[in-house]
Length: 430
Image (tube, rainbow, N blue to C red; front, side, top):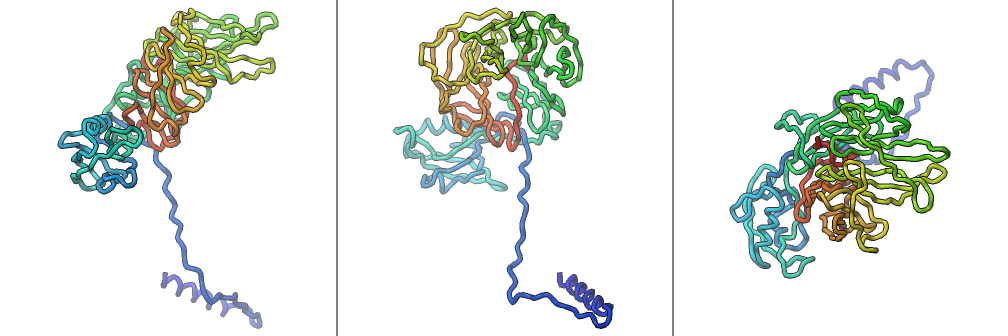
């Protein structure tokens, strides 16, 4: 800096010497005191990373102020053993704590940045559950994090099974096995319109040619023959069939229905027309979610007003995979709060719903009509919630990515990623 200042001074002297004679040189006012120099350091943008595997320890997220654990643990620590026994996920640490009594001490082996140490943590009474012990820490399962472009560097996985999903994030499509923490790239560019996963592939309808079904990864095209139906967009799937929203005009009446299409042949296996609402307005399918066995599909219907606007209220119907109405038992009046939102199948016979307060998950047994509830950790921070379908876990979307959650565990699936969509069940079917 000193050498550059000298060069600038010499340049100014040279310029003055070359000025025309008689021209007065006016110098700017120089303040007596100069403000201190400041340096702005740009904060790097977070990099999207995918959680890989089922766990390699327990990450500490927060420590409650004032508890004994505060002297031992800090956010970012990874607990790898408790009382000499290895722990790979948060469930194991929770179980170890619950096996103790208030006032007991647990020994924890901890990894912190580039060092390892062992410490003793005294357990205190749980603030929410009197009589039970807690360490006073917020935790989640620690996993390996891999950038989407680096998936090829980890063990290759072919995603399948009844709980497989397709996720659109970071401008790409990926298949996800949430229970095993496995990811597989599908397509570098997601389709612009609606899409659905079925039998190991992703399908969409072209806006320019709505009678053409496109398989996204291969760009394979299949001409449809929907008869007097006009296909609009892909709504979901059941079994190996893709479910399309379609419409037709009968006389002066606009009707909307579902078409079940074989994506291999283009054959229409069945169509289903929901008909009219109690107020005489056409019902339009806007939600389609198959159960984990692919034997039934939950369909959400909304009223279509005369101006083409859709109502926000949903009527739920369960169809068999054949397109017939399934026999279900509705819950007692008032058992499900008004305004609750269906989020999918918790297992083969139970539909999960979120009440307006979004403080718990309501479970409706469609065969018996029974209602149950389940607590989900950090539900208040969720922007979306999708049941995995195994009767235990949920995929929770937050402002910073995806987590796999259950009443006693949290495991990151994607960190610092912008998630655009999570598909319904169906990718692993067929």
